[in-house]
Image (cartoon, rainbow, N blue to C red; front, side, top):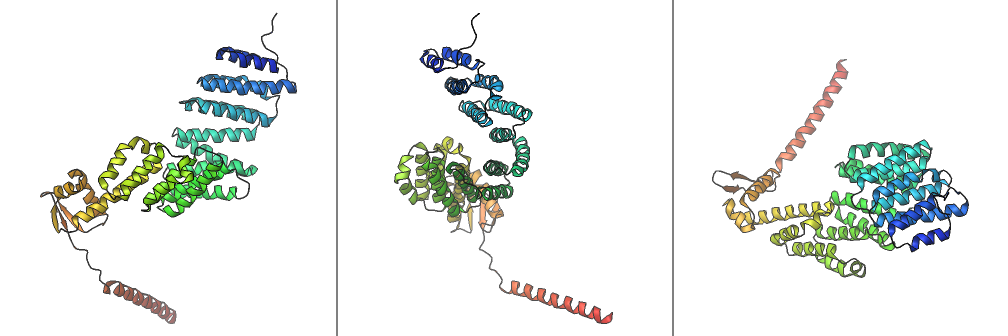
Length: 422
C-alpha cells in the first residue's frame, strides 16, 4: 500500500518548487506536512513547506485554505518549541491579512486560536493573538467588543510585566478611545504606553507608531507645532526601515504647515531629498491644498476639496482638519464682506462669496451664536443687520471686585462677632 505522505526532505520541497501548476505544488506540500516524522530535519523541512504553502495561498487569495492549514497544523505545534509555534501562527495570520476583504476570516481565525491557546495554556501566544483580534475588531468598528478585550488584556499583561506587548495594547487602546471621541482617555492610555516604552528598547517601527499617534492627538487639540515635531520623529523612524507609514507621517507634516499658515513651506518639503522619495498622487493632493490655501482663495480651496474628495476622505485625520480649515476660511471671508455694512442683503453676500444663499444664511446665524460678530438676521426681508462691537465698561469689573471684597470683609466681621457673643 502506497503511503499518503511524502518524505520531509529537500527533494520533496524541490519537487513542489518545480511544479508548474500551483495546485499541484499545494498538494505536494500538504503531503510533506502529513509526514508523521518529528525529527529535527523533518521539522525544519515542514517549516519551509508551511512558508511556501502560505505564500501560494496568499498569491491565489485562498483565505479559507489558510484557515484550514492552521487547523491542520495543531498536532504539529505540540512537537515544536513554543517560540516557533508563535512565529508560524503570526506568519499565517499576516498572510491572511494580505488578502483583501478577509476581516471576517481573520476574526474567526483569531477567535479559534485564542480558544486553542487557552486550552493549551499558552498564555503569551493567546495574549498576542487577542491583541491582533482587538485590532481587527477596531478595524471593523466593533468598538464595544474591542474595548472589553483590551481592558482585560491591559490588566493581565501588566501582571506579567511584558513591556513591549503592553505598549502595543495601550497604544491600540488609545487609538480606540480616539475613535470614540474620548480624547481624555486616549491621552491617558498614550501616556501609559510612553511610560512603559521608556522602560524597554522599542523597535523603530513601534516608536514611530507612538510618535505618529501622539502627533494626531496634539493636532486634534490644535497644537500643530508640537504635532509637527512628533510627525517628523515618526517620519524619520519609518523612513529608516522603509516602512510604508512614512508617507502618512510626511502628509501629516504638510498638514501642520497648512494649518499654521505656512503653506509656502509645503513645496520645499516635497522637493527635499526625503520628500522626492515619496512623491506621488498623495503628496500632489497636499500640494494642491497648500497652493489653494496660500492664495487665500475660497473657491480654489473648495475646488480642491471637491476634486480630491475621494483621496482626502480615505484619511479621516486629514479630511477633518482640512474641512475645519475650510469652515474657518468661509467665516474669515464672510466677516471681510459684511464689515463695510450695517445692513446688507444676504443674497448679495452670497454672490460676493460665490456660495449658496441657504448655506450663507445658516453660516451667518451660526457665527452670530458663536459671537464671531454682533448682529441679527432679518429673515423676513432676507437681510443681516450688523451692530458695532459693544464697548467694554472698565468700571463694571472693578465695581464687582470691590463688592466681592466688601462681602468677604462683612463675612469675616460676622464670624468674629459671633465668637464674641458666644
